[in-house]
Length: 426
Ligand code: AMP
Ligand code: MG
Image (cartoon, rainbow, N blue to C red; front, side, top):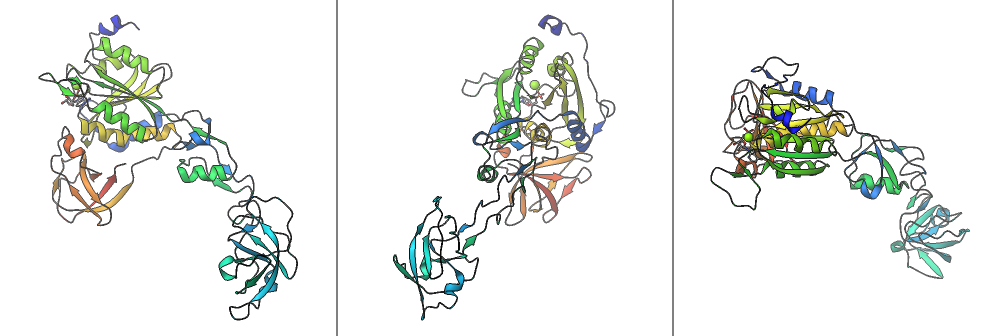
């Protein structure tokens, strides 16, 4: 499609979704369900484990060997035959001949015979014949011979093969997000690579004639663009490769090619601004009606009521058109875009963690809409302070919040001491 035809629009294609006529609101859950039923998981790729942190496993990872792979010592000390030292005590130590030393990594064939022992280090293979280890601190530390001051029984200070995991045991099921702990498990089980969902590539575009890049002087009537930076950062925090496209004017001639360009590289596109209800400058709707099927609707929430979601381009790339007010855009990202990112990685139930808390002061919420109010959660106290300045343009309050207080649709007021659900912000 040429930019010319794009600009020749004389009609407003408003694609309303399956959820009623314009003006009618859909619930947060219904909107989320539409998103999750549309977004397809990405094709898994193989990544080196050094590159895989933050990705989601697309395969079950099982232990290829028992862990540990061989019986070994849990302590620095002496590998003994437990029966030899069964009577040892501080007052009547048992003396054994020390026939040598076995260290971690030694591959030689060592053996212990009755009356003798081997010095051994932590992680060294337990010598043939030995069935226990006496920690060095319970001996005199002797080199040619050693006085053992405690009795031990078979298995003491021994880490048995398979005692951590059996061969074939699933260590990490598909769907596991790989944190450093899980990277350790992959490495310890000998895996150099793993099948994972690739990091979603997310393109962010902000729209609005009033937007100026931070760092540039501000002309009267203009504001600095915060959304594109915020959304790109939120996407990276959520494990994406995020690309930011600076402010696009409210002009389909400029917007159409900018969005089309993103189709080449993005698994998901997020725009901000330009979707207010019925505004004549709202060119995002007009532009997208030429590229795919995007429905614009009112979601019964505050902030973030005007939401657009659908797919565009040959690959049916999912696109979110988020409202321009920064708090609305942020809340929308955490509720909806985050869920879509999970779905791209085979994790459709990815949500912000929710905890119960007690509000420390009064708060208000409009009837029929679920509010997400910025608050300061004290996990230890189990309290949440509702911040003042809850307007959806009030970004200063966003900078002080660490949580969103969820006020159900039909609750219009809460008071100090009331119980709420709180979403913990990442
Ligand atoms: P819109 O959704 O375009 O009608 O914008 C709603 C409000 O959000 C207006 O006050 C805009 O100036 C503001 N806004 C839109 N985009 C941004 C942005 N990228 N950064 C900060 N504020 C924005
Ligand atoms: Mg705008």
